[in-house]
Length: 259
Image (tube, rainbow, N blue to C red; front, side, top):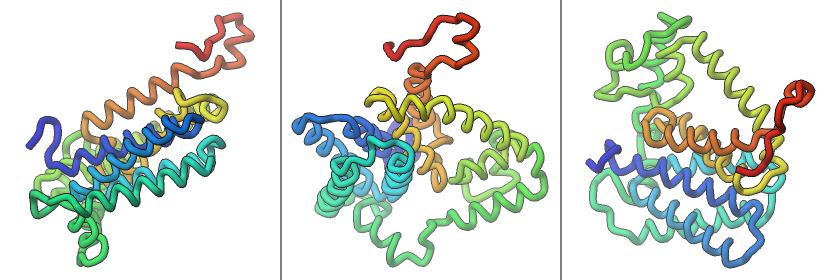
């Protein structure tokens, strides 16, 4: 019952963003001491997330790292992906030694839920089926915000643990199409800058990718604080956008890469 979180596993959202930021900085960092410090922060993030019983951080970081390896050359450095794997292993070791203070937290819960549980999705499968059933009845414009408890109830939950289903439930196919257009436009403007940029663009984009990957199975793009982190990182990347060719032809001032 800490401020801004429903339960302790929600801190996994912040651990995910921190680890992804460390990956983004490490992509262009050359100093060994700085890389060692980034390894410490990443290890702490994994350890804390796994200790809370959260598995989502691994999913979010893995998604961001995979996207980074594909689209951002600097992330392909051995020190980046190998350091991430090492920090995960060390974090898991630390989490396994820490005492759990609740039945639904601790590294043991993380392993048991993954390996021994009869419901690996921890109810998500039923949540998604409920949401899909409601979406089928009203697919075009959806039901509006905060209607899940009425049209697709599952306990006291107010979000579907999947950002795509959440958008479809609230805004329908029309809303999802609008979001997709904006996302593709944003990526088209951002990737050229990030691919040739430094940690001031790679790191925030990696944090965005991690939170977006996590949002496929959780509420990282639903709850206010992780959404605020996502929005702040989006603004950091957008502040480095290159001028559009049509703007240059019109004689508008060139944007610089300095803040």
